[in-house]
Length: 178
Image 1: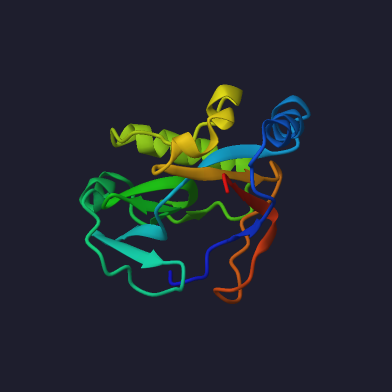
Image 2: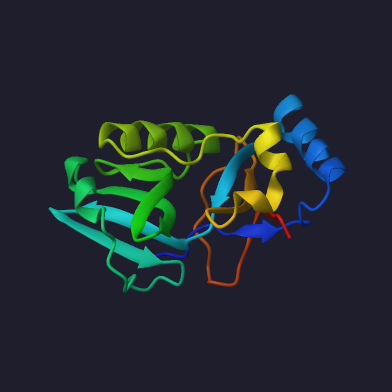
């Protein structure tokens, strides 16, 4: 840190049931995508370095708001870094980028997600990013204000730090309810 985290390209809105059923076929039945709920928070990355917790925003700057659960991450090995969201003053990671100095940027998407989930469970926090069910998706905007849609990720993609805050990755797509 600091770095520009991967940002999804914006895809079509999920407004109709037939769009959602098509997405379900592609993502789940055809296994083209890893689908995670999109938490309606502030994008942030959190790192544990030498007994301190650092949180940055998506613009490579210091995240200025207090993160209530930041100290909980001190239970993890030194030089651990996550990508995630701050929602209602708590940090919720959706990917592990580094742990104990071991870099996972070249690991496949599905591995980074699995490792993040294991770490979150280890510190006793809830994991918010399991793939949603079809009934959950069909509720669309009823999932607001907590979730504003989904993010689709290529299962074999690598984590590529971007060159600016305006760049987007073509391996990730966000699809909002409206």
